Length: 168
Image (spheres, one colour):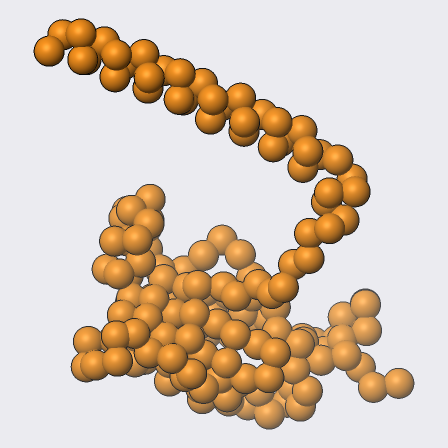
């Protein structure tokens, strides 16, 4: 029995050494510029931890028209939803489900330390919908870089900025 444990231990040490060695080689290749140029990013879809799926879906649907394209599970106890409109996609996941997948968020509250930046057309229509359904963080204003923008806090505490390029 003791021999078996020693052999397993030796194999484990050897195996983890191989993983470390192979990871180091991978890191060296990734630093190579030609390899980095081959990476083609397809899209970025934020997954937001939310307190209540239904109210969060309604918030994004009412303000910018995002529509649910997938619910999981497809039942009364929804844990996850993908919302989409045009090229924009946003995932919302109930806190309990989110923490089950990524327990690092167990002691975190919904909301974030980032700003979701949406480029829209008809910013005045979006603004009119947003002012009655959210907390305005920064009023509608013109920027030095040629846009009209405003910033709100959604129903879970996430910060959203909406922007429209100025017409020339």
